Length: 314
Image 1 (tube, rainbow, N blue to C red):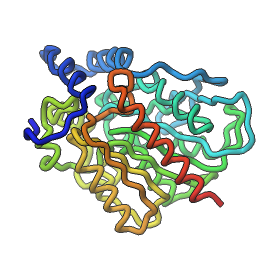
Image 2: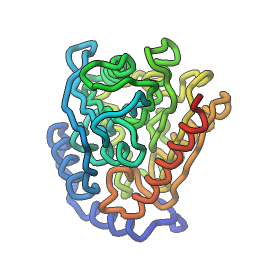
Image 3: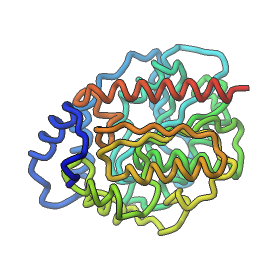
Image 4: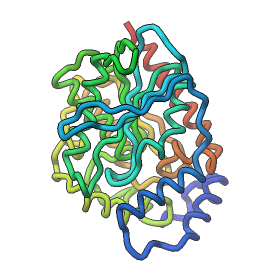
């Protein structure tokens, strides 16, 4: 547990009180956890924004078709960047539905199309299935596929937790072997970036929504290779990466991992904006009904995305 000086927002206190009152599962079973996560989002996430276009499609991947969902607040538009969204869930849970509302929010507020990717999940598909699928989806999107009816001028990768990991790993892949459209921005929300077990991972190990037990379970199924930069991007070379936004939460076991990633990017000379949100838990971007204050923080992040895209546009 955290020390008594740790700051908690009032809505977070109520949310944690509810979450911590629930009985712990007798065993962690992927199928049950996936259903539970979907149910949690139905209760805790804000309602979706109206969209002019929502399409469920597939794109080609290294092991078969990858489910994707395309969003646009406009029915048609001129050539533009597209946001490429990777859901969180420890590489084991989460899908297109758990993060549907957030994708509509991004499209509505940023006035850009969004493509969400449902990469293969562990334990059925351990590392490196997830980064392989995400890179394949990025290259497909960058080529302005006819199925979307859009001309793509650049990519913005974004995701939370495992999705934040995949957002920067994908950005690195497109730096090393550029796609048909350039990487413009990577947005890492409370990302998982390294194998660390100390610092915030120890301080917030239990009682703060995401637990160390859950993280250990996720990795036991995902089977990442320690030190592999495609599994743990803190070990990757950050030179030449596209601009970045890194956001961390004050009550998150992954807080220090995000902070270290931001520092690595800055040290490599990458244009980086670091945003820290005290008193918030992990996964705050998709608990905006349960945590009204998190909506304001997501608005801050989206305003920062607009700023960074304008700043770095030709």
